[in-house]
Amino acid sequence: MESDRKPTLGRRGLLLGAAGAGVAAALGAASPARAAIPGFPEFTRLGAALDKSSLDYNPTDELIFPSIRLAAGRVRNPLGKWYMYYAPHDDPGGICLAYADSLEGPWHEFAHNPVISNDWRGHFSVPHVSSPHAVWNPRDRRMYLFFHGNNRTTRVATSVDGRHFVYGGIVLHTDMVGAGLHEASYARVVPHPVKDDLYIMLYMGRQGQTRKIFIGWSHDLGSGWKFKREPLISPREGEGGQLSGAHYWSRNGGGHVVYHSGAGTMHAAYVGTGFDREDHLGVFYTEPVATRAAAPSFAEEDGHLYMYYEAGARGNTNIAIARA
Image 1 (cartoon, rainbow, N blue to C red):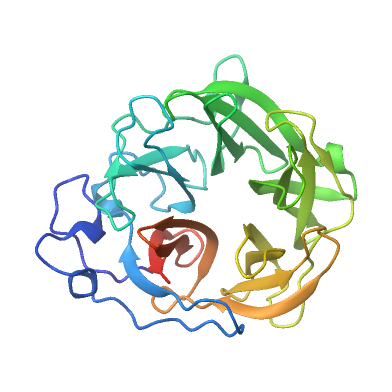
Image 2 (image 1 turned 60 degrees about the vertical axis):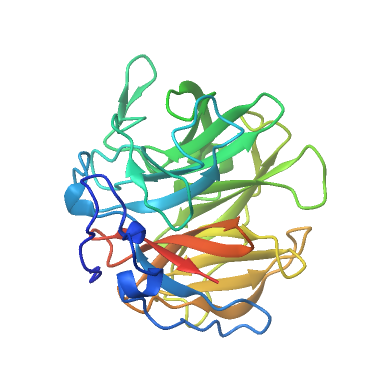
């Protein structure tokens, strides 16, 4: 459970914007959670991103899977410099948006959340939609938003302003992979690190009762995705038997994937820029306050690297922020 004290800002303000005080003083920031992997940064937890009690849209009191994207100079009429997409998970879910002019906040809830609901007339009606991941495409100047709903299906929608979306269809379904998958969700998409005009999708697939990291690829963000049947990363000793929330790590020479485990910690593996290795490197980050860290998203501003992630026990999560 989150133990950060309540913000002193207005109804839609974010905890990190406490006026007249430094970040650490305003938040009672925890000491650095040291990375156990040589060469990787240490992150200091700054606090919770959103005050859940002040949100207009918060149907289940859980916020998961943040996706941070620069909006200024990209989307039409941006509400702020940065956009953060997030969602509840349990029914009905709903893809939500917050915006800020700094990665240290304050963040503000978009007044018309959810921007995508679990019932999109003419396209789908499912118990919930969740796990948003946004990708800015400079070629057509659109934000591509990937999300799951139901758990066997990952979909995409596009937007020129990051707020109003056009449905793009299904990009991943368990039947497209085979391999006995029962779930195919929590996808993040990045440009291939060495091949032009190719995108990589990292997602969670469930085989039996075990969740693993799988991989797909496409030359088109919105369609044409192909998927490898074999998992890219399977759980090893110390990882709690389950993996999810994979994010490609382009630093340290590239070829790394950061993901969360059933043990409540984030881990890293080296897969190479050819995605043909599986070298488990150990613990990347341990949540110092809320017992569990998951689904990281990274962004840089003014020479600082920030990690947004979900913190807390499943079903009672909030979005937390840490800085390297």
